[in-house]
Length: 110
Image 1: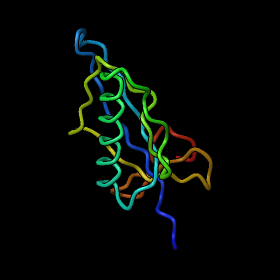
Image 2 (image 1 turned 30 degrees about the vertical axis):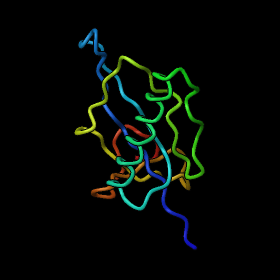
Image 3 (image 1 turned 90 degrees about the vertical axis):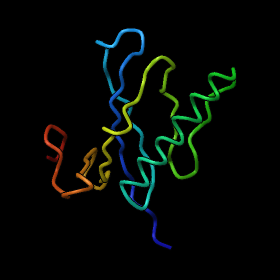
Image 4 (image 1 turned 120 degrees about the vertical axis):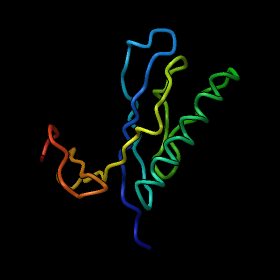
């Protein structure tokens, strides 16, 4: 069985009470495609926020590597602007665009 590739999903976020405050969530894990990676990232993010709202512990990382321990209530993810990249650990911390395969500028190995 061939292991699925690892993806990194970058999701812009905006603070709900102070919209001038912005940041990003970063999720990583295995997926068959960038589209699936974004879907899974949203799934684990929603599960983490639901657990927090219910007063429960945020779920730990799943066996496929996905988790959302760093999400915080009050920050709104912009899922339409989310971007998935292949994560190539053979060359250190290095991602490639899932669309073009080109190195992402500004990151090691680019």
